[in-house]
Length: 616
Image (tube, rainbow, N blue to C red):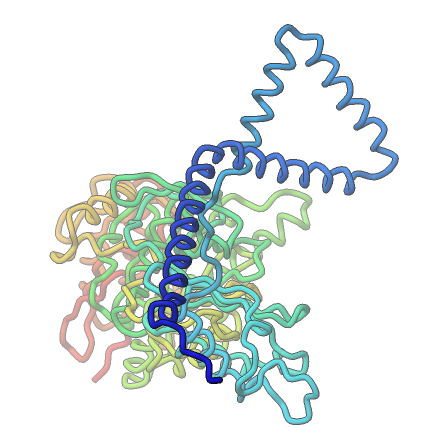
C-alpha cells in the first residue's frame, strides 16, 4: 500500500524553524556583545591596573635575574626594611596600596605605537642607493656578497635618517673588507655616487672608518657668512683665517655676527719660531675673496708687528693701510716692489745676524729682531710679466730669503694669486708655503693639487665670497669661510662693514700726498740705505742712516728730483733729512713719493727712495 504524502504545511515548517533559531541566536550574540562592552567599560580601570602590575612584576623579575647572586641578599634586606618602615608609618599600608595602584595604572596605560622604519618612499630611495653601489662594492667569487643586485639593503645600511622633506640626512653603511678604501680614486668614486643619489645642491661630509669598514655620510649646514672683521680673542702669533664646522676643530671663539654674540669654531694659523707652517699661500678665482683674506690677515698682524704690502694687481685694494702705524709700505709698482722686497730680504739677513751674535754673547736677541714682520704679496705674478718686459728681476726672487729663513727671523710671508697664473709662482714660494688656502669654486683635483689632499666634502651649489678650503701643514682639509673684510674706501662697501674695518685700522702717522708730516713715523729697525740696490748698481751714502729718525718726505722728493740723471744724490738726501728730525723705525722712503727720471721724462714712484738708472 503506497504511503500518503505529508501535508504541505508540515513540509514547509523546517525553514521557518531555522529562521526563528537564527534570529534568536543573533539576538543573543548582540546581547552578549553589549554585555561584554559594558563590562569592559566598567572594569577598564581594573584591567589597566592589572596590566600595569603584570608589567611591573615582569620588570621586577628581570631586574632580580640580572642582579648578581652576591648582591641579592643586601637587595632583599633593603626591600624588607622598606616594607617594614611602610608598615610602621601611620596610614603607610593604605598609602603604599594607593601608590602601587597608581604605578600600575601608569604602566598599564595604552600607548600609541610609534611608527618605526622608513616609509615606502624612503625605502625605495634606500633600495635605489643600494643598487647604485653594487657595481663598485661587489666582486666576482664572493661567497656571501654584501652588495648584490636584488640583495638585502638592510644588511649594508647600518643607520639612516631623513629630514622632514624626505631627503636623506645621514647614512652609515658597511662595505666589504676587500674594497680599496686606502686609494683616493676609489673613495672619490663612491662619494660621487652617493652625492648623485642622495640629492645634489647640498654639502655632504664623508667619514671613512677603515678599521670598521664603514662610511658615514652627513649633510653639512652652510657656514655662516655674517661674521665681519673684528678683534678676535687670540694670543700673539695666532691668526684667524676664517671659520669652519664645529666638529672639525676643538676650539671656539666669541664672535659678533649681526646683532648677537655667539661662539664660532675658527681656523687658527700659528706663526713664529715654533710654527711648522710659517708661510701661507692663497689661490682662487677672481672675486672669490683672496684679497679680503689678505686684508683680514694684515689687520690682525698690525696688532703685534709690522706689515709690508705688495699689491701686484695695482687696483688700490690696500689703500686704507697707507700711512698707518706699523705699515712699512704699500707698493703697487714694479720699482717700488723690487726696492721694498730687497729691503725685506736684507732685513731678514740682518735679523739673523743680530740674533746669532746675541746668542753667542749669551744674551737675548734685540727687540727689533723679535718684532714680527709680515710680507703680504697679492698677485706677485702680475709684476713678473712687467719685470720680464722691462728686463728686470722677478720680485719673487727677493722672497727666497724670507721664505727660507723667515721663521727664525720672525718674518712671515703671505702670497695670494689666481689659478690661471699659479704656474708662474717661483719654486721657493711653492716649497715653503706649508699653509694653503683655496677659495672659490674648484674641483677635487684642483683642491688636491694645491692642498695635497682632496676635500672630504662635496662642492657647494652656491659659493659665496670667501668660501673655500684650508689645510695647515699635514692637518686635515677644513671648510673655510673668511670673515667679511671689504675695502672701506670702496663705494660698494656697506656702512656696517666700513665701520668694522675702520675701527681695526691703526692711527695714521703719515699724512696724505702733498701735506707735510705732522708726527714722527715709528715702527722697525735701523736701515743702511747704502745696501739698497736698484738697476744693477749699489747706491752708497756717506754713512749709515738710522731709520728710527723721521724722514721729511718733501725734502727727500726735492733732493731726488734735483739730480735726475744720477742715483746717489737721491740717496744722499735721505740721510740729511733723517739727521734733522726725531726718531722713527720705518724703511727710508717706504711711504714717500719720489720723483725720478727715466728716458728724460719725469715720473713718480710710490713708496721707495731709489736711484733709477737713466735710460736713453
